[in-house]
Image: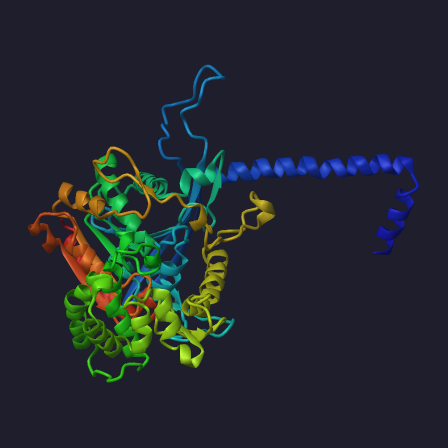
Length: 545
């Protein structure tokens, strides 16, 4: 330290030293340029790190090879035969933006590719990495978290995952563009990938490229998407068939949202559309049942929910359709019934015109105790930041689990999979980005199959999934849902599956499973075990077409 102080003092009075200082200041600039060029080359070149591991699943010892790396996909509309215009002044048709998409793949050793299913797994967001599905549900090792309460700070516990479906299928966890160790590069890079259709195009290209690079074109193929990942899956399933000539054996959906007009989140901004209230009511009832807030607590949840579903589709729908023309007597009767099913005060329900959004319900149910319920998993609750607010300021489940997932994966990917420390990038440090924080930049513009032009606004991808099923009548669909999910209510998923524009006979290709859990059904250990069994059974009966 003393040497540095003396040197600085001397340099301040020496012209020669000032000249040296200038030269010294320029050197790092050159180094920075070289480092930037090295990083850019690293990001635009496919990477691959191979490691070995083993896990025991349901008594079966499974040795596997883990491949961790990136593949490069280009912006929607890119043509690999287009090298650009010969005239430098002419407009270049080939988009410059590229995305390095990060993935972790697990291949069972000794399995023949033609007989071994492969499943592409991802979360939603939009703009989320796959850390949740990877570390909590399907990876060969999973993080242990508290069931319906906050998980204490580190150290966290990573265990062998007895419920990984690696016993039935190889797994490829894909991080969305701009997340994980993937990066976006080039002009207008965010515009090129942050949107409903550009995102789906990137995933479609990634999957086709992966099948080629790893020789898996003849394997039984599946998609497994969660939340917005189900929106993505509907488009990708159709694009793989119509644009790449790739038929899937099955599409597995977790916490589905295919028509955003059914969302209970922003329903207040869309008056005259009452359907979201109808579809969310059973989830409100399940939540009130779980927290023992009902005036009369039913013994059996499923029997209770069947009753609520019938009321939602009949008397409740009728009352909402009456609007301001509803009679005082009908208003009172409906409010009283809603009170019995949700635990919310009658006067509150009447003041709300019988219409309560997801955020309002989460704020009100435990409001007298100064607590908010979770949105993703309403079994969770947490202290209200602002007790007087109309909706919660945070999601208790996300706050309870995020640190455990992020910490566990960062430790696992660097120390077990040996990725994220390549000196070619930023002196050997790569940040794992759990989220692209892209929702505010997201272009919710989607062109449905057969449409002349894209449509702005809340996407509806029911036609996309229907198109995939019509083109491939043997395609099977499995929907998985949690009763305590206020983000994508389970009754909404049932309704959407029943309103796919498909022939009646294709409806038999759909199976639906519910779990006593929330949006991330795997956060509840018994539900994860059920999910594994349902997934394995689905793959076993569909892998031969």
